[in-house]
Length: 97
Image (spheres, rainbow, N blue to C red):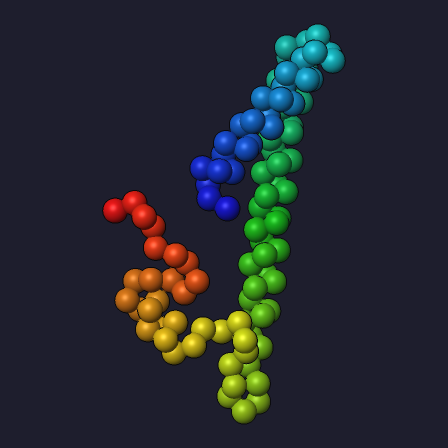
């Protein structure tokens, strides 16, 4: 997920939460404090999710067989050559120059 997409979603969720919180409590200060707490919880959850995905992908990359075989997740020699040339395997090129 790109940062811009995450940021737009975060701001949208926080705006809806702040408006709803203000309507329910009729207090600007309470709505502000609850929105800040919500923002912190979303950030902690996002960080934990990214940390989990990195931890899970690290375990998959260690799966090398005893005979020196690579796991299905590891790139082939063509993919490695493409990565050295500046392209990432499985990622299409951007249409924007």
